[in-house]
Image: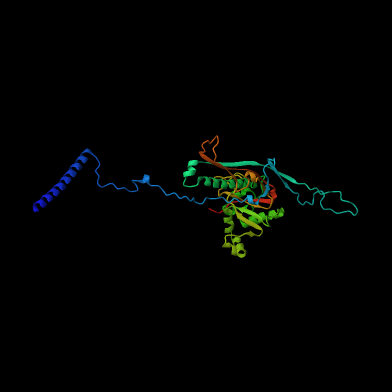
Length: 375
C-alpha cells in the first residue's frame, strides 16, 4: 500500500509540474508572437451586457403642463346652430344714454305735443366665421403594442391646443393697439415708449393700475359680470401685486381668513384671476415677442398685458354641432379603411371648429401693459 501511495503522489506531482512547464512555454510563445496575455478570467457585468439591459417603462404618463386659458368664459356667447345658412354673425350694440341726442329729455310746453322723437338706433358689429382644425396620425401597430395609449394622448393634447388656440385668437383681438380695448400703461406711463424705457420697478403692475382700470370702466358705465369686473392677470403680474406692501396690508386687514386658502376672491368689486397665456412685447407695441433682447430702448424686460373687462365687452360665436366650444372640441376619429388607407394601417384623430370672436365695445374693456419684477 505504501508503494502504491508513493506512486500516486509521484504521479500527481509530475502532473502539476507538467502543467506549470506547459503554462511557461505558452506564456513565452505568446510574448514572442506579440499576443496579449490574459491575467484573469472574464467577468460578466452590466458593462459587458449593456445591450441586453432595458429601462422599465411606466405606463402612467407624467402630468402635462396645461395652460390656464380664461378669456372664453367671460365673453358674450352667441349660439349658432348648423344649417342656418350663414357665414357671419351680427352682434347689436344698443344705444347709450345721451342727453345731447335728438329727442333727449326737454322742457314741455303746456298743451303742445313734443316734435322731437328719440330714435333707437343699434350699432351692428359683424364677425365672419372661420374654420380651424388639427389632426394626428397613429399607426395601428403603435396603438396596439405601445406601452402608453398614444391615441388617448393625441386627443388630450389636441383638446389643450384647441383651448390655447381659442384663447390666443381672443387675446390678440382684445390687446390690439388700434382696434382692441382701451389702452393703459403701468404706473401712469404716458405711452408704450415710456413704459419700454422704464425700469422693472417703475414699469411693474401695482394695485393702483387695477383700480384705475376699474375706475375707467365705471366711468364708461360698463356693465359688470355677476356684480364685479374681471381682471385676467399673467402670473408675472400677480406676483408683483401680491408682493406690493399696500396690497398685502389690505389683504391682511380684510381677507386674512382667505390668505391661507390661497384665494382672495372679489376685492373692491374686482375679481382677479390668473391666465398663463399673456401677450408679450419687446420693442414694438402690437408685435408678439417670445424672446427678449436688451439691445434696443427696452433694456429691462418683457412687456405683458393684463385684461380688465366688463360684461359684453367682447363676444364669441359657438357652433356646438361643429365643435366650436372651447376646451371641449368635437373630436373626429377615423379608424375605418378607405381609399387612402385601404388596410386600416393608421388611425386619424382630429378636431374642427367653425367659430369667431370680436371686440364688441372697446370702452368696456381695458388693456394694461406692464413689466414685471419677477426674475
